[in-house]
Length: 101
Image 1: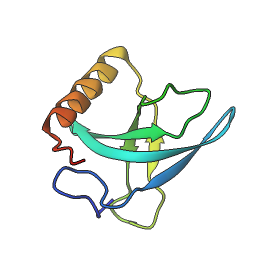
Image 2 (image 1 turned 90 degrees about the horizontal axis):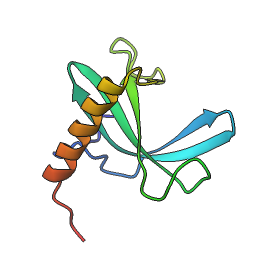
Image 3 (image 1 turned 60 degrees about the vertical axis):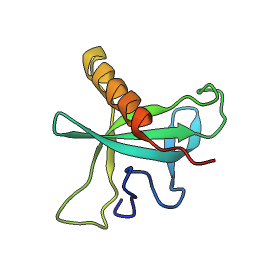
């Protein structure tokens, strides 16, 4: 995740694959946010039956600082309050992004 620009957006499109009960879903990494000392990853899934167009998914995110080659771990957001904090941080992120067309 070290190839982020000043807006915390990957310099190149980075794709991750999530293994879900219904199969594999490819997602583009939008950004990584820090909320209350916890990192969260924002993913934009490719079109699939589980996501509406333009919908993003939030997950807890952690990397092993002792082993940069280890796969990062994703976890579920456990409460509505936690989700709302992440959603607010993402809205603020969007407000601060300078979109270039």
